[in-house]
Length: 260
Image 1 (cartoon, rainbow, N blue to C red):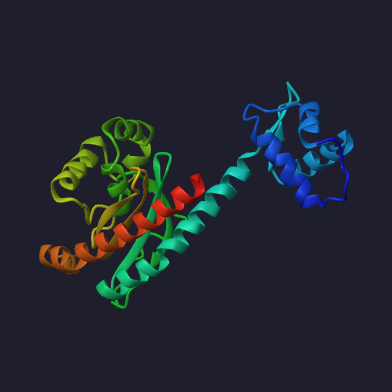
Image 2 (cartoon, rainbow, N blue to C red; image 1 turned 90 degrees about the vertical axis):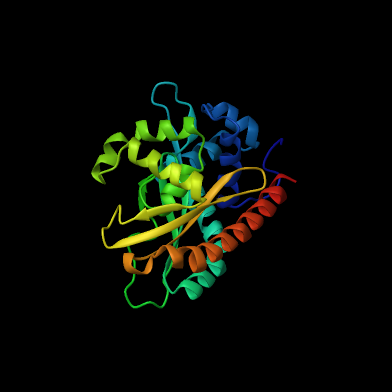
């Protein structure tokens, strides 16, 4: 670009500066951003200052280089989870209708599991142990355990190291999580049998795309009296696995479309 040949709105200017910054993950000086955008120095500086005010951009006090702010990462993650939750919503509603219990959708975020959606069934005693936006250590709760158990051993060990103190808050440790992983390996689903809230139990399965990406986990929770082995095997797991497979296919198609 050689200059601002036509009028351009402030949002479009901000978008162009952000795209230039994205190409420099370690930060970029003002002069490089001027060159990359084709805007004047004054325009770029003014745009950067406005984005600093909302934590979309930050400036290194020593090098004076600009870089993308952490708040943008938060917004991007929220956009991704909103899209995932929208894809999963109808399937979660079907699960809630079939089981009459509470359905949770969680995604891995570092060493945590983030609940991004919840659907409540018709059964009068409801399992509301997680809400949208709640985080737990990987392995604590059925959805978080499904994510943990589907990870390779190196990733599980790293998560346990990072979460050592956090796990203790829930009465968990590596040995207990690995016991849950062995159950998952043998049975094909994660089981939280009153491990978080004594009166509540849940089962979960991971959502894995065709290229092997661990994208999410679906879980169904209810009071422990409803979570009999027979009901898990005959009612909950078939429906849970069906909806997890449907969601995995949708996410796989989405991934391939984005890469095309």
